[in-house]
Image (cartoon, rainbow, N blue to C red):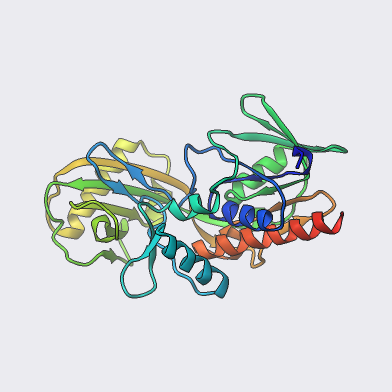
Length: 316
């Protein structure tokens, strides 16, 4: 199929992967663009020189609906995911991005490509990246990154797509530590209702992870908001101090880093599967449509794929 009949998906996370999968199942060609260095979005894993892997974004996912349950079973059977614990938690293997990589296997993916403007003509959609490189034309465009970024791109392109501006997010600072000794608690993770730290996870308790004492601690939303623009060194020191207070002991990390997620968790969702304007052949999807879960991102991306398929296939 010529590129004029190809669908452009912006965002290589779970929603983008689910949309691409559905489009391909219908026989449509797809091209993926993402500003990041890797596939997965907030399903992210960082590898370090110490040999550890840190799932510093989403820690796991669960399946509630039939479609995502079937997809999870496929991932587990193919070895890119595995159960973690006994309450339905599932993680990617060897890291959290693996299921998204499986969805996007075989698709052309342009990473480290920030699309700053989209424009539609009679020939189709043209995309312009931050380096001034144009791609297209495309038959339709799906935007699957966080809602504020969708709003910004739509505005910069002089377009209208109502809805994404209603979604809101909580930020999160994540602390990554490779400790020299056991952290002093046996559970796989600890959750807290108050204080600077909301969650502590022992990464080595997950299937397929390296032995050792790797911790990921997610800061609470309010703390993260207050310190969102603080220097990384100050955030790292503050969160290590908060962690030591929680554990009641000093920690001696061989590796310590922080990562800022500006759009970590959906607080206000649209309550609809996706957005799509057939007049423009422009749509958007993500967890911000349905709620703060990886399954919501999958369902939203698949819904967007369905809408585009119905539009393009019906037009032929």
